[in-house]
Image (cartoon, rainbow, N blue to C red; front, side):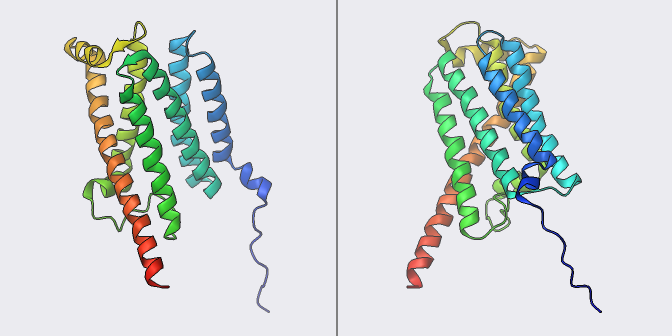
Length: 228
């Protein structure tokens, strides 16, 4: 007789306790403590913040290794990434002038990722990283090549942390600090230069992502009205 026993589905609690999701909770705790002491201990803040960022790659590896990928985990990752980056950008906006630079980067980061996530699920995609149907080569390269994506993401975070660490006082001019650092010819100068390039590429991709996602939403509305 055929075996009609179906594979048992994981319980709701078991998904919450997936290894990558537990790592996600640890990331939240690290960030909470880091931002609580950012003013009193800049180096410890930077270390904890970067450790949380590294954990983002670790939980992705665990999700594949232990077959524990979940929608909840993906959303948890994105929310943690966006909030932690947003908080750091707010801090930088209080340290450097013009502050609008960092507030604009914050708005672009949140808007582009939220639109991309929403438009992906709107058209029935399983992941917001599924961009095979995109006509933009840079956008497809970003989500299709993990090394390139990793470089851009790491570059952004390293640049933000470096700018935070090299600031010596409040209300410094951003351009003066960046130019002075690049002219030093030190290992820090090289790190800032490489990070600045990757971060710039990431912002271009965010703009492309926001426009592509907005087009997908508009196309969905258009097709929906045509079917009525």
